[in-house]
Image (cartoon, rainbow, N blue to C red; front, side, top):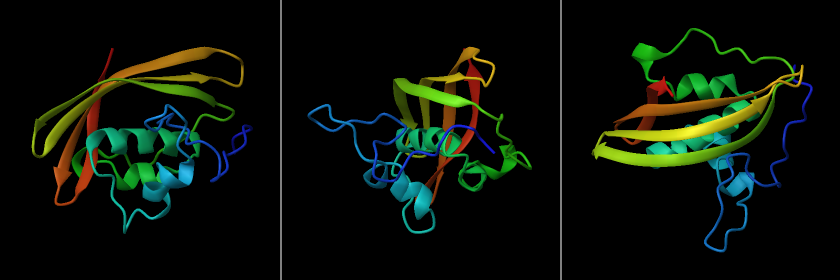
Length: 141
């Protein structure tokens, strides 16, 4: 179990997405609709899926991470490092390669229980199957 509290559904979404006025979007209106109703509401594009997967890491939602991982690359389990505090997400670029393939480059920052800050910089690959996008894998930078 993580020592950091799970953000509330009413607060800003952990992914950091903002509206046109640069105000944070609430979790329930942003990634929450994908995480909390995965069967009915798929992420509409690769960037939204990547943001929702970041939010799933923040909220320790292994079920969502596994469900949105492309089957051939999906691990058997997702484990969370105890006490990690996620500090933010920066989407660097997004590329639509064709109707069913896209890439998103991002930097996610976190701090361990011991206070060590790290950055995960990755160019992630996504594939669309039907109406759903799935994470394939990524190249760390």
